[in-house]
Length: 94
Image 1 (cartoon, rainbow, N blue to C red):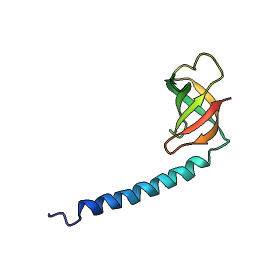
Image 2 (cartoon, rainbow, N blue to C red):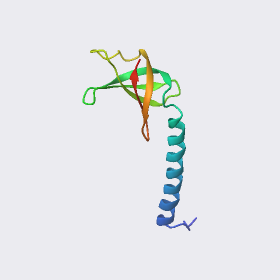
Image 3 (cartoon, rainbow, N blue to C red):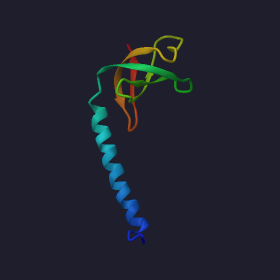
């Protein structure tokens, strides 16, 4: 079949869907502000001084830890969510 929709129209439609999804995600992530979540540690980002993990809902969480040594990958940490970003949550270990 011949494609009857122009590339410009396809790009425009995709952008509408992506913008709507970003807004939905922003609203959903904002609900977690101030909550304490259990986060499984995946690793560390020494450049930013953060630990990287995932919540029980599989949401990415970047957090700081007062300990000099970062928690081991696979361990669980209670994290208070202090900020949200387009694709992740941020917080502090409690």
